Length: 161
Image (spheres, rainbow, N blue to C red):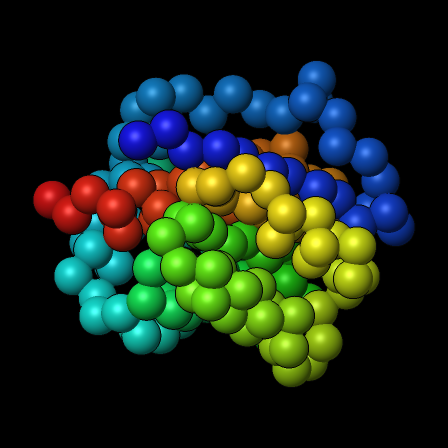
C-alpha cells in the first residue's frame, strides 16, 4: 500500500523547514510501529485511547487516539495538561464519511484546536490513503515524533501483526 504524507504548520509557529528535521532512522520507526501494534492493532472500529507513546531515545508524547471505522484522528501533547503540539489523521479513502468524520473529530475538539478552516480543508483534500499532521509547535515538527507516531498508527491499523 502506498501511503501519502501531508504536513502543515500553523502560521504563528513558523514555516516547515525540512532542513531542520531530525532523521529518526529505521530503528526508531520500527520501535514506533511495534508500540502502535501493541496499542491499537486490536482496537475496535470506534476505539478511543489516551496513552503515553514512549520510544527509547525520543521525547515522550501523550496521544489521544480516536478511531472512526476506517479512519483515525490523533492529538499529540507534550503533557496532557498543555496545549496540543500537533494533530494527525489517517484518511484511508475507503469511506468518505469515515475520513470526514475523523477530521470533524479534530475540528470540533474542545477546547478548540488552533487550526483554521484552510488547514482542515487542505488535509481533507489530500490524496488518499494519507497520514496528515498539522503542527502548532516547530520543535515537534523537528523531532518528528507526531509524524512517525501517526504513520505507525496508520500501518498498525492497516496491517495487524
